[in-house]
Length: 156
Image: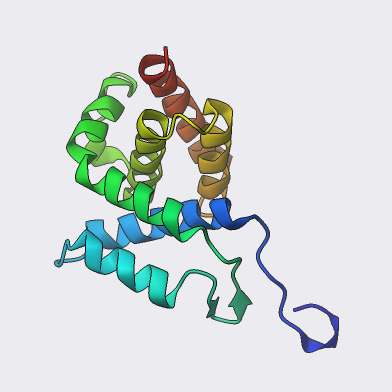
């Protein structure tokens, strides 16, 4: 908390907040019995983006970017998972990758393929930053490496 008892806002802009929310919503879909992406997207847009949660005031997220990336990443996850699997080190499988990391990588793949208006470095850096919110450096390095390899394939 900031001085005077006021709660402080999370750092990052609306696009960064949208990407973090995409990863959270994608993870929720992976773990849930109900895989209705439209329902989850609407729930996040109506009740979570920019909300105060557990005492933290979150930055208002870019709802359009959130909706596009979540639905695009979710609907094409078989394609993204195949692409991710192609770039894993020998002996690694998708099943060994934590679900949060799969969510990060799927969202990153979608943006690299579909959001050509966003520079490659911005996409990779944003998802590395999201990864830092959940893990230490080795996982962030892993995300950086995989997304960099995929970017070279998708944006060559």
